[in-house]
Length: 549
Image (cartoon, rainbow, N blue to C red; front, top):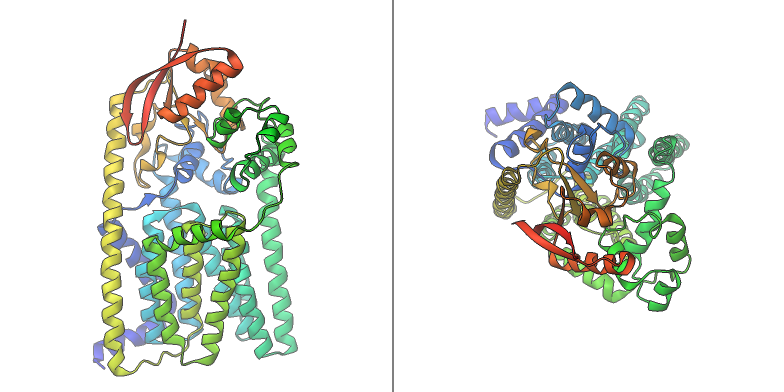
């Protein structure tokens, strides 16, 4: 071995935390220097805008809904310190970097080897780069919870001297992840639980059993506390009381069931157009789309049945995505690496089997997408590295693994670069649209189903260029306190006729949605409307609605 290379490996073995920190920081610097981070969905920039009191709200609001209010309070304080700074993107990067550092430290601390370090670097170059370029709060939660589980397992399976310290650190990481999003905690724990149980079965002792029970108890408490704290903080605010139940009932109709029976629709006092308006997120009429009406609908919905055709279509859609397909190839290479070791192979196959079972369950309830499946694939990859103490590859085969890995990374990075370039182009188009729009504080833009892509704002944008833009979003937070606050700000009692009767309200829509709105106005207000397109960008038009005389 080259003496300099030997010294570097020796230093890495003596300093696992600094090594992990260096790998994490280098990953971040490479992404920021050569790639373009962007928001995957509208949810993240929306939470930034709500907490900053801009675009979607006039006052800073810690009630993020998707994440715990405690996260919102941190963001509100940061935005009060420096308004319009990209605090949300900075916070997300800090949390992702922390998750990578603590995950890498657990891998290198468990048992150091040059092979484990190389595999961890490869994981960061693939999965880590994806999470650093595709910012999404669910991904952040997965990464933190993943790191916490590794620390808990390190304490559970290691020496008794340090296990409480490892358990405590793991609990902190898991708790932060659960503050951001609860479902990833449940899903990753369902994957990890059989591996914990297998270790207990193979090396059963009474002290190990006690550690297992304590670890399980801590995890259950974290899950219950994370879930109840999020809802409890919302319910403490009288304005938010009941909204979680309202939104859950709405989701049952829109996201989980396919209500097509015309007799059922008419029995609850809806027309087919009313249902279409609900499905497309324009359910602003709090009497027609009330909690009582939602409960009436859900009480008559049929029990969900598993459909092989639907599940097959979802599976085909997922596996057709490059990120999922390449992830499967990476894990297949990992299985080849672990195959000679019976114990490691069993755990690897056990994790994969648990993921298949969990995936079938998520398919049944229409909850599976790349934001669910990719972190689970990444978790299997991390666990394979974490639980592999020795990698035996014949000298002649190392070259082939290196070439295949380098080829995959080259394809992967070029794809990430193209996606980043597309995000930059969307950002330029968004900025140009805002400049042409030249919004004034007295104008309101009704954003139907997020057609105006808020995620065209980049994570590290200084947000002053959108400070004059005021949006009423028709989406998850429709009929929530921030929604009603925005209506009061413009003295609007009913948004439906206001669109046609007030001059400074504009509709972000498309021709299909315009037809739904026009039909709704004729059915319930006996008002005929026309649409004047005053701008067009992305996949939407900006319309002024007029009442026909």
